[in-house]
Image (cartoon, helix red, strand yellow):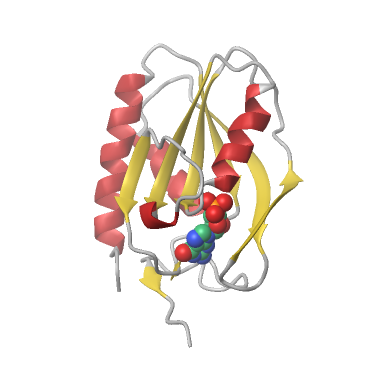
Length: 169
Ligand code: 5GP
């Protein structure tokens, strides 16, 4: 096991407090990137004590059934509401090459939000292909393929309460 459920929740709570402080008095929208971020977002939003917090979902697919990035970002579901004038916080499970987050920021920026920031549970800094500033980061990890706590391999293991490493053959 790599990150236990307790370790994850403790860090997510810290992030929530930090985010609530930074966005006090603002109209914050969490843009949750499906599907991998759904558990992270569920815990994170409950740790953000802001009365005006809104939550929306954005579906992208950047991986096939394998464990290598295809480099192609496909939008599978759009936001339900406009974000013009809002403070947007993209909630990602993991920033790997950075291509997905960069693509999302470019796309969301065209809709006129007041600000866009990124919150990612995990980052693999050695894999970065584009420079992406992660404003709120849970954990930096090595270049290993991980699953659990929302993260899958071929749609499996999302329900693991911890994050573990998948051994490649
Ligand atoms: P990027 O565009 O930054 O290369 O990839 C980001 C997306 O790739 C993540 O949102 C996630 O869906 C997927 N991904 C990257 N690394 C991993 C990993 O180690 N495990 C899993 N399950 N997905 C990953």
